[in-house]
Length: 95
Image 1 (cartoon, one colour):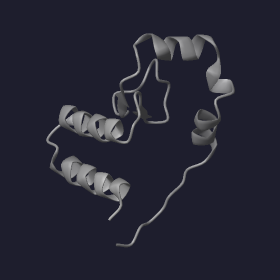
Image 2: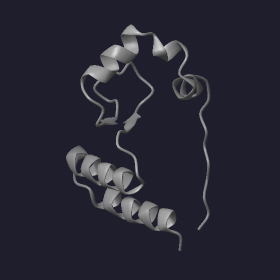
Image 3: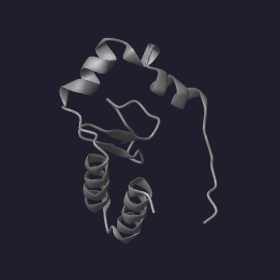
Image 4: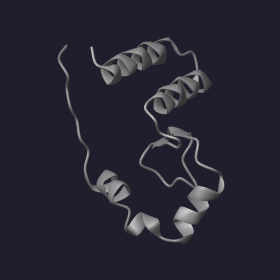
């Protein structure tokens, strides 16, 4: 089993056993760091400065980053953000 697959499986199990968003967030951050990433943002496709109550927002970026991102109009050129605005990818994995 590859390291990435093992990490993903461990996260899935922790996520299933999470009792609240705080536990889920801690599990997500732990696996992201094990994958070598310093910062992450896993959010619903919403305005990050004014998300609705039902939105999922898991992020460890400095508090200043969303404001700077918005002020610089990065949402108009960021390829990942633009892709999430125009495409939903659904994938089924059979194990």
